[in-house]
Image (cartoon, rainbow, N blue to C red; front, top):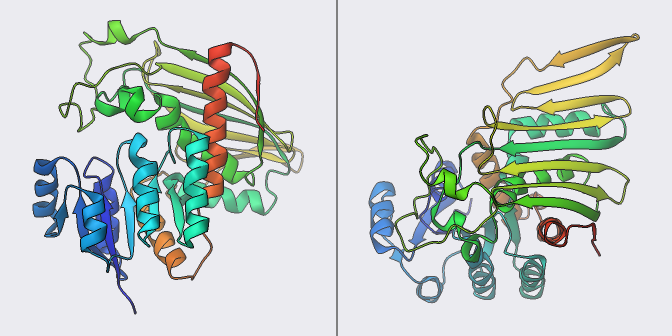
Length: 355
């Protein structure tokens, strides 16, 4: 059994989930870490007992030719250059979501993987949660019939993380590209990855000033908040109607700041035979013997960091040729087309056709 040598690039909040999932896997070794923040890099090395530490990923690739693969867990604006450099260096890559800042750059990443013959998987971890796995099974077996409408909400009343998340130059956007990416991908995945064809959207930036002095406790603070003088220039709220080539429509709503009672997070799918809601528990709605019936699954379905274990296992099996890619680059490019169209539609205040 070959144990893969893995490097994790980026020592921010999400990287711990990657590191710990690799450390739990019998066929992986966290061989090296890389981060531009030397103090944080050293702290992570000490925490996890990793001694090969680098502040420059190109130096790491040059000095550790034995590396098999990397996880890219950095600012969104660095996903593409790091991923492309890793692929060019002969490494397979698991890149965190979103794939990049826009679809054009994402397509460059995809083409680099194809040209180099290396494997590229996207970090759409919500595909790996029990809620999604069970829902996918029900849908594939026909429980919903043809899905024609879906709703996806991931709304925070006061949840701007600050740091690089709030600076568009680093993040590419706010709650849409940070949070909405999860639920949009999850809906597409559940209904068979239909191609997006059109988007009508709204984006609002109205609450930053009032939120700057709020007395509420912000639970989502970014570890990067003190790294440099980041701006706060992303949207507070974004919503969109997304139309797919199979006729289905997704209504998505996301926010970092919204005058509402409490945070909300759910997806719901409606089909010709039944409906499903994940909130995060899984509920089914259908007609049975002419009676309306509600069904709750009698087992835990809420998303947990177990999803990262499943994601890392899928990545390792994909590298070894034991399974197809769970979250291929093609899906990442299509998702970036949707995000691009949402932001453009909100800017021009009319429908955008996706080609």
